[in-house]
Image 1 (cartoon, helix red, strand yellow):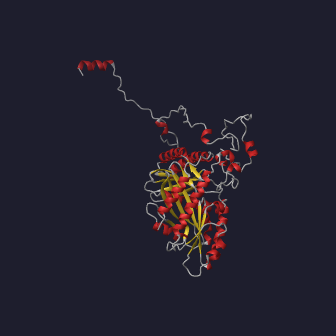
Image 2 (cartoon, one colour; image 1 turned 60 degrees about the vertical axis):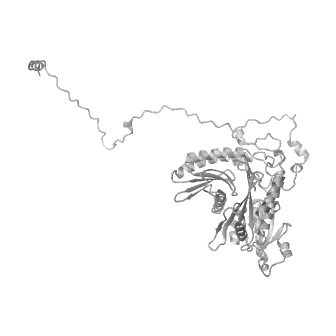
Image 3 (spheres, chains in turn purple, cyan; image 1 turned 90 degrees about the vertical axis):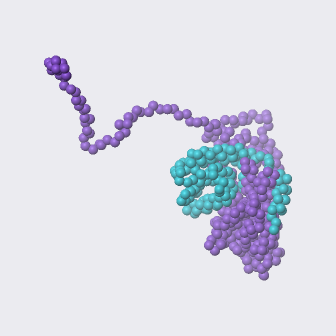
Length: 337
Length: 162
């Protein structure tokens, strides 16, 4: 699935190199990394075992730079080829935009090629993708080795979709760039074809999206694949279209207000709600009503012993001078003290 | 194909950026990234200049995907939060909406609790914004014109030669 980011003006596509173990997928990427100008490529990241077998994936980002104002990026991934890494292999396929199937041309590896191809189909099915909808290229690698199958044999066994193919010797770099260019162009073609068929929302009969986010999962397998050159207005018979596009005289009142718990399905002809933010009341700062706080003096917070008898507060004994009698005062006055 | 392209418009990014900024300030984290589950970077905020965000996005998505698979094997629908602890820097990864991953990178100036709290709160708001973008009417292809395809192809020919 191509990511088009209008904010960063960026288009990003994911290309996956698939194929049996040791067929040369990582070698393809390494060669591209070695030969491509440095401003184009990013770092080649390899999640490999100690013996340099791919464990999870290899990743090489390529940035073609600005094209018509959009910075165009291709992200190349490889999968681990070994059979028992199927779990991770499947993960890499998620959201793939273009496939390169790297086949080992040696006659002895024919069975492995077939097995890997079947595994690819199975894994794609697991995500609900159709292989016909994904641009694919076959690369018949290791053409320089003795005892290789002929192209006809390989085509017969592996290429059931009449996909373009390239012969290659990946260690020497033969055919590596042709394959890459081929798949990149196919992906762009496909992207163009897909985005140019811009169906209005009304003509997507099954895209029932709900405003409640938890339920906003599109029903899998239901939507019509927007493949090359399909005019979606033709997909729906005109009677049905009319039925879902109410005439201006229809009495149906548009739903304008929504309760927050109300689910709205954007089906055909219903009032369109494009964004959740339109439905929600604008966020306002919570009004905090100041509550009268109980007056707590500092003494209340101090720790007091609870064991035993509470001490009675001691009365401060003020030492006051004793009142002197009138006689004493008179005597003092006489002395002059 | 089952899914359509991921298309992100400027208005959404502005909203998302604002939320991420709020998260950054609130949790005092170093940077945050929003990554698509397929490994595409949606947006980023904070000190990301020293980071290779493209590779980071791909690896984080891979890591999250494998964790999800582990969860499935264990019999759990999904581990929605992932936390990597390092000596200086730590990473908090959480699922947002249907198909995005919120990544927060932070160090010892803040605590995991704060990051978790804010990531959860902001994550819910982000989920709303993202699901809003999903129900949007697809806009006409502003990017993918014939000229785009042509110039992309000629650029490919320019750059990819031996």
